[in-house]
Image (cartoon, rainbow, N blue to C red):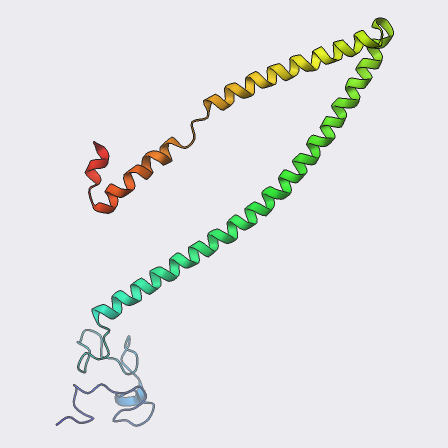
Length: 178
């Protein structure tokens, strides 16, 4: 038969031979490093093992924690992307406004050049000179832009690593090095 003095009976916090609030030790102060109601350091926990979670419970807790962590990371990513998208939208709008303003500057500078050249050349020839200058600028920009676009290769490293994912999931990572 077990009783309050038997070491196999777990003492409830605050209850023990010394009365309420003693923690089950003489003088009411637990030994250093031990919380009230727990087994002393270096000893096996008392009881039948009901106070220890099962392996299934531990795995369940780990999966819940991992799931919560993934959800929190996704929410953080959404918040960061939303903030970045708003800033990119504002910046794009401002750049578009600057582009329109720059277009008007070029338009009025072109008109001023046409007007300045019209005195020695006449209106028709000065308009033709301004148009040829803008045609040359457009051709140079088009050729350089086309060359830059031909240099674009997409995301080759990302495509390469994505191809390796199925082998890694199967545990056959050596197939990725062949």
